[in-house]
Length: 398
Ligand SMILES: Cc1ncc(COP(=O)(O)O)c(C=O)c1O
Image (cartoon, rainbow, N blue to C red; front, side, top):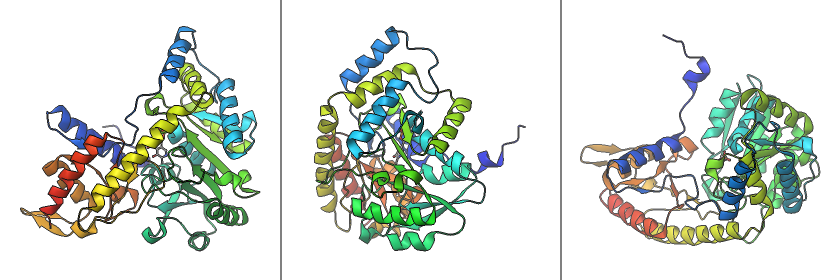
């Protein structure tokens, strides 16, 4: 038998993807499942972007491209960062990757040695701990208080930094909490990182899905020296409904980006040229579709929250953005139904799927025990129906 590496043995499959797959399987078997498990917009990629991709194929953009990204896409990314954040990067400080996921993965590969610590505020996106471990590092979880909108405080961060701390991964707006940080909050975090020489991986993939009045701020622009220690990660998946196109990017210090380019070169040689051409259209054309989708997500957030909070015992923090809610389900844990023990969020999510045919994701793999994550990237009808089923299923536990 072929021996598996220790890395492979330690690796856990993505909890979010496996829940979505389970729901898909039930649906294929004819079960009417309402899915609140998906991590992607349910909208189609806007027409102009699709057309640009098709044209690029016909124009022959089907060969290898420079592995760090087409110059025209890098230019569009640089312009976006300048326009939105006032951040100026040169071509060799920007890299195009296979989704934001690869950007974070490669940034960690480039910065982390075995034994190094990476601070991961909890709740966190499920892939961070796995990616840190694949780089040989140790994730150090810092539990962000629900009473503080699940946000890390500067004093918490200060206390957690050790001589082994190399980096922190910040995600705002956050999957799964939906919380974002203000400029002042980011400035305070950046100041500590600058003083203690802790690199920042700033995952801003949900940037455009923000419902509050204040604009998104990148931590790289929140402190005069933050840019020098920050790798800004972003992409088109969530803002432009382009999850399947697999374009993400990173901008940061030249020495980090050039090593990340070397990783891309050895690993996948970059993403398709026609995808990159479509992404130029996404980033440079009028952003009306982004606004339209964002506004619809906000309506759905309000609808789902309203219905959810009408269920006795459920508490739910109001997210600033994304398309997730993270209700606290503790009132329904430690129950028994028909001999079945509902002891934690994972068993609750399983119960909801099997008995009420609602797909949710347990908060456990997000570092949010006692919570479930509900995605409202689905129609308002599904939201109404799914939350109705949820209320019914929970009533049986009461
Ligand atoms: C917080 C966070 N970062 C990154 C990603 C990955 O984005 P991409 O599709 O660009 O790889 C996701 C996708 O679910 C996410 O939720």
